[in-house]
Every structure is written in C-alpha cells, then in structure tokens.
Image 1 (spheres, rainbow, N blue to C red):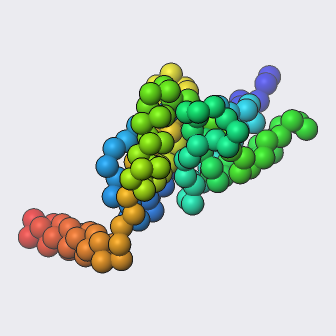
Image 2 (cartoon, rainbow, N blue to C red; image 1 turned 120 degrees about the horizontal axis):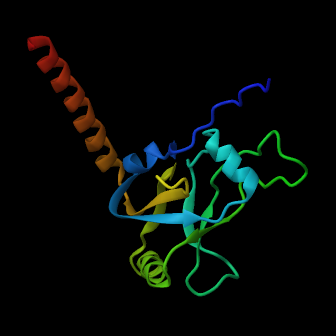
Length: 163
C-alpha cells in the first residue's frame, strides 16, 4: 500500500509584507500574476517565501511596459533535480500594458514606489501578488501609526474587561 503524500498548501496566503503598511501610505492596489518556474511553485505551495525588502519596477532590457518583482526570496525546492531556480531572481509580473505604463509613469513622475503586499494562490490555484502604489512615510507618520495601533489595542482590552 502506498504511503499518503504530505499535505501541501494548495490555496490561500503564502507570504505577506506586513512592514509595507508601516513604512508606506498605500494609495492603490492591483493584483498581478507571476511568471514562475516549477520549483518556485513547489516552494510556494509549501508556504516558503519572503517579501520583505522586495519591490517592483521596470525590467531592464525588457519591453517598454514590463514590470518585474525584485529581491523577493523564494527558496530552492529541496526535492527538485538539477533544474533549480535562483532564490532572488527577477520575476516578470503579468499585467496589461496600460496598467503597467500607468504605474511606471506614477513611479517616474511622482516619486512613488510599487510595493508587494501579499503573495497568495487564488481559487483557481494560480500564484498572484497584490501590489500597492505607495508613498514613503516620514518618521512622525510612523510614530502616529504606532500610537494609533497601541490605542486600538488598549481600547479593545478595556472593552473586553468591562464585558
């Protein structure tokens, strides 16, 4: 009798960049597809990815309106053969040309940043990434965000105690 295979994550969240909402004001979000190799998909299905310090930008040497995901860490899949992928390679994002042009123009003209927020599998099992068009926060904005978050936590604690 065959042994049952190890359960893998088939749909749902793989990785979330929680630091992005602390460091940036997110103005608009957009869902994009990713061009991945087979071993990258296997690693993602096991829930292994890290979006910290990653960003999206124009692909150098690519077409006029091609976006790429830079510095995202997807570790090598241990059981893959010699056809492994690089852990931090540039991954092409699948967007309509009009959307890509619009976002690249906002980055060039207005000094914004394209930040990956979440990496997940949709209901059809396709790997998707949620991108945010963002502006950087100043230090005082970060302090205010932290103060509001602490107050919300304290308020919830007080309400729970009064019950």
